[in-house]
Length: 486
Image 1 (cartoon, rainbow, N blue to C red):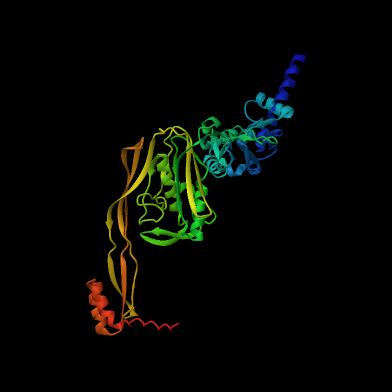
Image 2: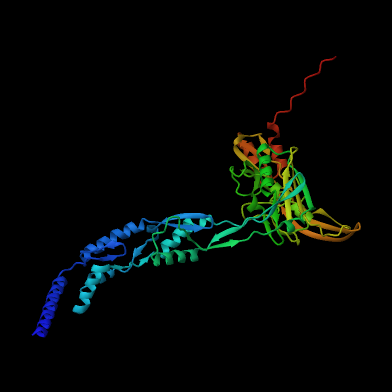
């Protein structure tokens, strides 16, 4: 009898449990003790749970992630990465706890909830395109090129200046670091915790030992700008200052344009005359070509490798033909390379008597009995042409003319002597300089017959005939007044 009673009681309990499960299954809410990430979803319907997770996602996006780039730190709000949770099906899983499986499993799951609860993890994902855009805009600003070891020249002596490491952000690698960090769900960060991004460190070039070889004067050249106005003087001085102190290691190339630009007031320049399409016009930085020309001649005397040089469109007064080096935008530049086996140092300065000098220092390896000089040779001369024109707004008898200039073709030669005897004559360049026409303008307003005759002479480009036509209209010069006797 007792045995039967035992089975009867067990059966009644199972029936009651089954009835209870049936009631629970009818309710579309999550059982007590269930959490999704840090959200307690107990007693929530599916819709309520999704709304709670959306609010949590928004709050999650307001968290700040600290990103480390070398010695610098960038704060990033997670929403800027488009961070979202991707496993929305977790709500269905939460609803199923204590409700799925046979009676025994349901009973066990409910007891586990009462004892320790259950936590479901959210899987976080970020928009890779947004992460990349953030990194490129906010993190690459800390990229820094390595600063090679250099020299200062103080009171005629060289002082060594240590270099500095460079740093460049590895953008693709850093994007993956952020994506993996978010995917692992390790947020929020602890106080002061920094996620280090991937960087590439570049070491500076040069050492005190290498630069100790810079002692000898390899080449020097000076030009005068004594006829220049204050603005042109300022431009020449600014250009020399930008170049002064440059150190070039073996094989490195120097661009004059890149070094002295941009031509702005903030960079030390003013408006002054310069050549443009064969004419003299005011431009920002006018006169900078005298800087590049002076440097060109110092480079020639140091016998460094010239990779780019262009003549001016017209002749300049401060050097001989073919000794100039023009700069114009990015299409005319003076470039050269350190073709020696040792570092070189460029010293540039101007003086109070309006002279600019460039000195190039390095290690002298040329034979002491060998000398070089340079010779400008005029190959061809193109005289200025005379062009007659009219101005109907000026009266008959008026005449004005521009000066015009001669064009030239010239070559520059390097002459090498050993023990005073010429051994080589090497052509360095061939340069062509445009001349400018002499333009004569006659006034043609007045007597129709005389005007027509003058126009005919202008059409023939006959200056003597044109002058003869206007000669009767030009009053004779006034006779000088007599000087009283002493």
